[in-house]
Amino acid sequence: MVDITFCRSEDRRLDRTGLHYRSMSSTWTLPDDLQAPTIVPEFPASGEPLPRHWSLCFGCGDDQPSGIQMTFVVGDGASVVGRFEVARRYQGGPGVIHGGILGTAFDEAQGMACRSVALAVVTAHLEIDFARPIPLDSTLEITAKVDGTVRRKVYTSAEARIVAGPGADPDVVVGTSRGLFLVIDQTHFEKVKSMVDAVPAAAGTAAEASSF
Ligand SMILES: CCCCCCCC/C=C\CCCCCCCC(=O)SCCNC(=O)CCNC(=O)[C@H](O)C(C)(C)COP(=O)(O)OP(=O)(O)OC[C@H]1O[C@@H](n2cnc3c(N)ncnc32)[C@H](O)[C@@H]1OP(=O)(O)O
Image (cartoon, rainbow, N blue to C red; front, top):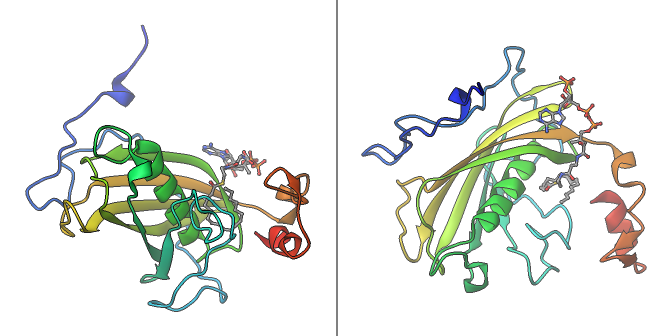
């Protein structure tokens, strides 16, 4: 018999404060040997903007018109706060955000939080709880932090809140995420770094592509 206890759906409604789950269905556990995050000197101070990592990124690129164009400021410690507008083209169900767009936002925000401890990372694992529907035309804020590291592994978590527009209530968590990121070096993109938008990078963008 297959043991499905690990993925049993629990009551995951938010409590009356809107801040805590009664219980989580997640299987996510932090390892016993987790190290507290050591912040790299390159990471800006709390309250400072955190620049996009790549202009053509679907999550943060300001030269990517189809993307969600998240912007970030540094939070306390190994954390960031990102925002984006839930444009109507991000629709999933009628009037609400597509879950994959929220996934993109969490991925981007948790990846950006990793810049507090490493120069470059990629996502290895991401899991999301979609707690409330998120209306189009709202402004979503994602707070993301590094919970700790083990060797190249960076453990992160994040929460989403609607802070402006339809459904705005900064006390209500509308989604949560947990993710594992892996620190990479420049060899990771070696095979593709000369190709941007599936064509060889134009002069001027190649230098940026090599740094991501
Ligand atoms: C969109 C691109 C963005 C690029 C950004 C560039 C830098 C900018 C700087 C900062 C940006 C921050 C913002 C970014 C936001 C967006 C991030 C994304 O969406 S990234 C795209 C999606 N992700 C991939 O395409 C990875 C594809 N996967 C891989 O390339 C490999 O699988 C990789 C690098 C993740 C791991 O491969 P290995 O060969 O380096 O490492 P192994 O030896 O397999 O694992 C190392 C340890 O990690 C564990 N591990 C690996 N994958 C795991 C998993 N899925 N679940 C649990 N553990 C895992 C292993 O068990 C091992 O653990 P033990 O050290 O032995 O304890």
